[in-house]
Length: 73
Image (cartoon, rainbow, N blue to C red; front, side, top):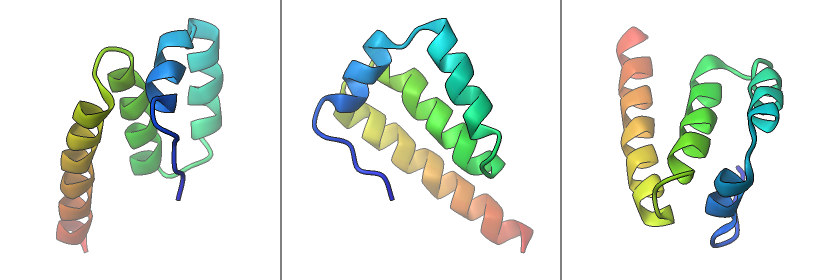
């Protein structure tokens, strides 16, 4: 599990460039689709929302992914 220091995620989002996002997206192709989509969503949200809001939205996304995965089994 990856842990971020306070403010690190937001700072990453603020400094991310198109080239960086392309590199990240390319590297995420090596991970399962749900992991990659969650990571990309976190990066996108962090560019314009405070950390607490990002965490709340990602919590909802994770719950949906788990529900979807359990429903498919």
